[in-house]
Length: 478
Image (cartoon, rainbow, N blue to C red; front, top):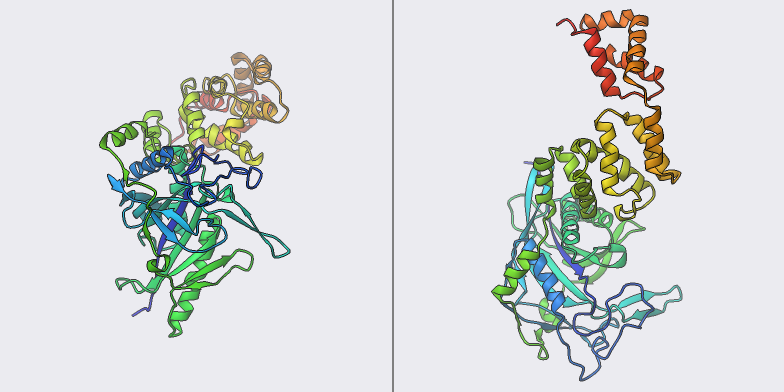
């Protein structure tokens, strides 16, 4: 029997919530500000300073819980998690422990084997620690602007069985959070942080000894770090050794993990209820009001795009991966007659330009409605696809007026009479290709179209050329 080992992966995710102020004080929640300018006695942990809960942070956390099908608890509590570290000025972190804001919920991901449901264990609201900056001279600088920023802690059940599934889950979660507008989830800014728990077992057996992986600063780090840790644990187990429960750091440069600390238990943190905060009570009326504010989420949008606009699933998937891009498509679709042409144009021409220039759709200079009207000239056969591409590139790269270039192109577009003459000429000069087509070799039609397009210098619409050629040549023999 094959001695196969199966990875079992669970994730712990921390999401910075997009609030104006911090979780327990009125200090501004702003990334990139001058260090230690958004601070006060509360977020610096001065004796006697009392916390006041930020209602907006609770509202954003509840939106996430609703979107992910979690069970919201009508009553939850805050606790003190006690440990000493320079980035924790109070000597404890205010978090939630046994009485979470929400439990359960799930996210469905698409894998090579089909759809898979990744279950969530719990969601807690907690405060962020300060930012530690390690200098080349060995000093540690602390920026307390980050201290007290609201976090949503999300813990999954160990439902993932490969680094690919973990990465796909995180991509899907980030997309949902951006749709909800609760966080931008920029990992470079620390707005989304991930720790992974991984163990190996033989399929069907109980869970093995887990190792926690930290310092996973990108989705690539998550993928690479998990792959490395799987191989490390395999070598230990297949060599007859025992995996130690510990926390390990992923080294992005050396592409390896190293021990950070050995096994920890919850009692090491001496949790106890936060005496300065009352229990958090969530009323049914609040939940019902929040449900009304939930946007259409990516999966729902994808399905609607396919059914409403009759575009391909792959086209719809690309559009729905970015809420702003999906909104741009819908505005253009109010004007554009050919929705498939529009979707393809956005996914190929526009996304290609945006990616090349590291821009977002919000910075794109052609308005959605203007694009829809422009593409109608293509769908009506008044402008060839290649001519449209050429105009588009000149507009974007030379910053010329789309309207002016379009008017120029339309004035030089070949007339129906001229096109008819050119097609007749091409057919007369290529009787051999015509006979091959009539004898069943339909592939030669492309060569005839190419010759016509060459004669017209690209001014004709290839689809119209194809229609005229087929009507003149007739049907091939079967």
